[in-house]
Image (cartoon, rainbow, N blue to C red):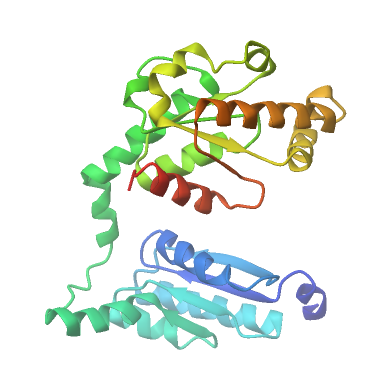
Length: 276
């Protein structure tokens, strides 16, 4: 029943592309995130690269609109004008990401676009792509203090208590920016000694601290090890207080991840460490 579906999602959003659809989906997510509390059902329609597939996409979009009782939203990165016009006939709000930007740029540059499908994937052969892959491998190998070798190659070394956001931030920087990030947990043994892990002192200029509120840390740890001393609020308060005191004492820049998104954390790190 349409009424039941509305309780779970306000709208259905389609990401339509003649490629993988990742570009349309990424841009669409960025736009949709501006609307708090909006619940959407998301459908990616990739490789819509001929009229038959375009007709099928229109049928599917229109059918979903009938089910929902509201017209769907379509984010499109279709390059082929013929296929684009077919999909545009769907009973939906059609947001053409290619035409929105290509037309004004053609005017500005005084040059016509090639309208070539899959141009984004040429990036796969670029030095930038290879840099990201290398950064991902590096960050995974140097996660949670697993490896001490090649720390001189790190762009940034994160420190902080366990579950403060070091790993997701490291991988985000690797995937999105090609940044080689290592990370080390600060543990009770470090607090008892009053020192960072010895291997890190040569690289203090690359270090950045992440902290988190004890209450939020307890929630996160409880999901991993419910009812454990590791997840108790008392333990979390002690570790956070000791970690922040150590960062201040060692002169390590740091920020709290409690209310920040990974994107915000990454941008702050890039700016403060001049890694752009």
